[in-house]
Image 1 (spheres, helix red, strand yellow):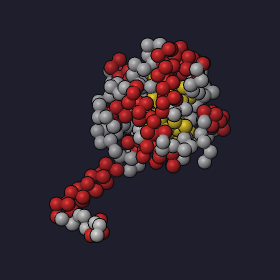
Image 2: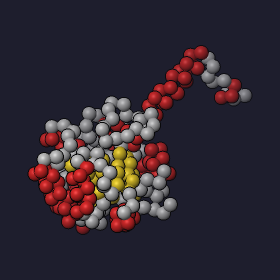
Image 3: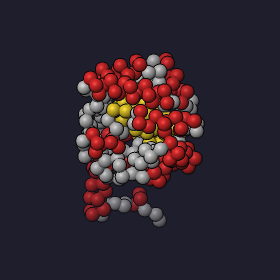
Image 4: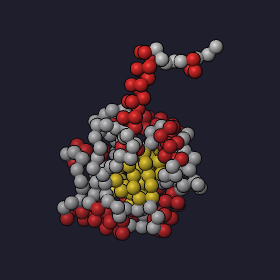
Length: 266
């Protein structure tokens, strides 16, 4: 499989080919995702919840994101690696955005960054693009805005809100983003946005009409037990399998059957 680049992603949109994206936060998970041939690996700020155990994505820091992105990079041969800009790493202005996004490229080996927001961060997107840092925008339900939104709610159901999202999508495309994530958006609105843009849309809870899809890997493999979002699908239950393995180990140690001669030296 050839190396995936920004141009690969744009070409898939033009050819009508679906784009795949999953999160990964370390070497082993990134390696699995990459070996499966997924187009993009997102080192998502969701690690605050699925790895660190926080209630939302806000607490994770820039240093922590760069650290995890570097681990993920070492597990990737072909996928495009995207660093997720954490809360307060870009909101205060273009200069801060460029310096922090640059860390993802210089220190961790990422090839693009993702950041939440639309018209309000168009200046940051433009500055990043001018600095040769490829950008994926993120619209709809933006988890870093959970307190303003009053929770994790579908966005764009009302006519005025839908019109606003279309305007936001056009603004991030004009600012230079090469793709946009649409989260928790009604599928017909996502279809309309997808048709209106020349850049790819990557859906997460936005229906089947987006140019691609992204999910949190821990939801896909069943390693996050707190909740499963409506838009996610669990393809395996590794949490259950891991618990079985640990219980079996504990039982064998307590009974004295592990280690056996097979696991011992003479």
